[in-house]
Image (cartoon, rainbow over all chains, first blue to last red):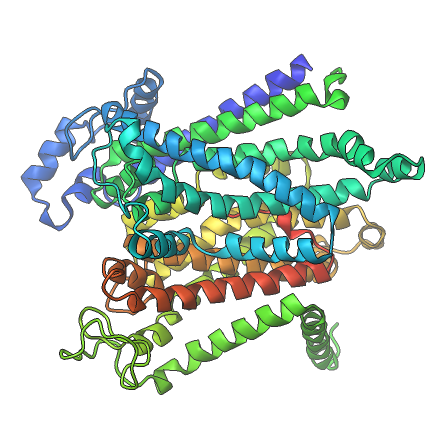
Amino acid sequence: MLKLIVQRLLFSVITLTIVAVVVFAMTDLLPGDWATAYFGKWATEEGLAAMREEYGLNRPATERFAEWVGNALRGDFGDSLTRKKPVVELIKFRLRNSLLLGGLASLVTIPLATLLGISAGLRRDRAPDAIISTGSIVGMSTPEFVIGTLLIWALSVGLGLFPSMTLGNPDAPIVDLLPNVVMPTMTLTIASTAYLLRMVRTITINVLTSEYVEMATLKGLPRARVVFRHALPNILLPTINIMALMLSGLLGGTFVVEVVFNYPGLGRALVDAVSFRDVPMIQAIALLWAVMYVFFNLGADLMTTFLDPRLRSLRG
Amino acid sequence: MRSLSAVPMRVAQSLRWFAHIWRSLRRSRQGTIGLMIVIVHMFIAVASPYIVPYAHHDIDGKNRLAAPSAEHPFGTDSFGRDLFTRVLLGGRAAIGVALLAAAIAVLWGGLLGILLAFIGGRVDEVLMRLVDALLAIPGLLVVLLIVVALGTGFSVLILTLGYAYGVTTVRVARGAALGYVASDFITAARARGERKTNIVLRELIPNLLDVLLVEYVMRASWALTAISSLSYLGFGIAPPTPDWGRMVFENQVMLAISPWGTLFPVFALASLIIGINLAGDALSKAIGLDRSQEAPT
């Protein structure tokens, strides 16, 4: 078991290393350097030279990569090119806002999707399942910006319930953000519930058609006992990994939704950074997302290992 | 040695395969509905240049933000451009990008996945770890970074999306191929001493065509979502080409005054993606695949 944990940890470190290389390479090695990207068509020889000097862009990429990783490990991602302030300073509140949005969305999504998924699975191919399953295809396939726009049309323009966009600064107190977070949360909830419930439904069906559930039914156990005692633990266990994947996506901030509602989270900061070629900002946010992804996956792996008696007793 | 009858036989085989796909779709109501929606959209995408009443950039200065009327069946936008024309034309670019990107994704991802399953061993292990790591970076982010560096030309968009969605296809194709690699007919082929390329091309790939088709349909729907979202964000299909995603962005500010410019492209885009997914879902059920294990990135 210890070996299993060490192995997972090692894989996470390897994954993060590869991610760091890819992120750095994508932002740094693609045609031109950031100086040319930053100045665009307004580039002058002197401007480029000055910037390359200032950021040490004349040094070899490997050297700069080592420096970037070294600084990042100490929590220093450099200064934003457009705001001339430390990236960490700029990201701090945006991360909080994205966590608020993602946290709320997951709080609604996880119980809702589990409930709907299991009830659809229990009534496989009957009316409730048909409605839930088809509904989930619709919810899952509709692009987030479409759901968001329709919500704005119905709830902001039509009923005047919530503001259609956030006007405050990223560092506004959470209480002020609450009216603004409602519709982005709804958008994310619709999309992710649809997706998660399909998985839960499939797992439920697989578990219910398994031999041990059949055995329990044949023994004459009441249906409720079969479902809650025999089936449920086996349904919930595999969903942990899927939920982790979803959580990392939701908590990292989803840029389309944040742009639709002008919500001051990480996703919108990234889109802005991309439009202004603010390379240190892009690198920091991309890396932060990858760290969250790896962290949640690792967490889910370890959690399933602890919860699953079959894996717990594994020696080796 | 290849006999002359090989070519007609190939044609007959592929016709039979298409007939089998068609039948499996038609068997379910959901699949039939999805298929019909997709066919209508494809017809519009192909025929729209010949049936639209105006040019997409024609401006009717007297009718700005007009509601639907006989003159402008879907109304007009804030410039006075005919929305019926723009919505009918607005899917062409995105659909083209999505179909080609998905083809590239399934081609390289599918081939690599099948090869890895066949080769196995150290190569497989290392490359799959790399694939896992690449999946840690959100797909749309990768696309965004590349598009910003290389510009938003059609070829860049197609290749980038084709790359990004191929990464997930590697896993799916590898997983599906693993089921066959250990099967009797592959072992028999190996024992016969068949060349490896022949085993992959003649034994493995034909058996995986159904899986790859479902994969193609799904990637096309994700690519369509991605390209529309990119256009919405301003990194995708650039004006003056009419595009649903961009139209939603442009007309969204006018929602309170005139919702038509937003609602019609929203309906067009959503109906097509839902149609593709309904068909794809029915298809995967028909060929006994469990598609719900996959997730868009």
